[in-house]
Length: 267
Image (cartoon, rainbow, N blue to C red; front, side):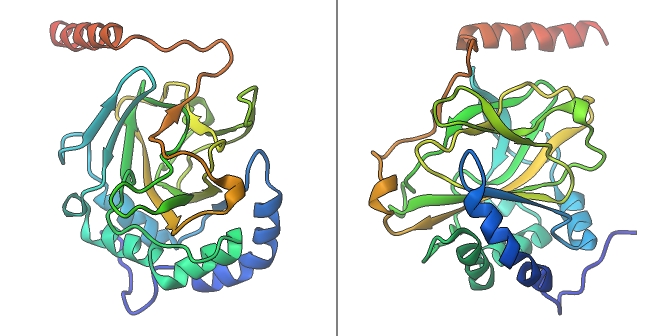
């Protein structure tokens, strides 16, 4: 039987949010290497089951494919490719109720949601996929707003440590990974985005081939940012870890070619 949710009630865990705030905002401000926090079991389980039920597979929609030396992932920001229930949750996460919660949590005033889901929406990464350590683009090219916050919600049931896929938070000098979090089911990670909020999951996934690292991503903006966190406008800036090398695009294309054809011959 499909999971059901009563739409007469908020999809947001309002009482939980209220109770979490006093301690959470202290932890957020003090977190290293940059302000962040994670919440486990944040949403009601029925909500999560519905999200997972709607999440499209590799061949269900026309995913944007990011395949280069720094990343190998699928993404979708088109609302028409997102299930109706998932849209309702995204609307809730972009609502004034949730923006107020984020403002109190992070200390960032006048947050603005992005209904276009630029760079966000659905992210899907299969075995061998990765996302190199990076600082995010800092300006919304359509609205001219400054990116200030990331929110990631993970939808990965029965995800084991050995599968990898941890989101890693790196020091500003890129000398070490300071924190990492496994992308387990119903875990929310929120963090401030600046020129040095380097993060990613740079190690290729080792999950079974039938599984994938599923997440929802939402980004929040302000009209301007404090002088101390100003920077030139830029797209995503990838950073190499100590002793890390990136494969050339032609090498990656050749590997993908031989991988596809080896599968055909081994059938």
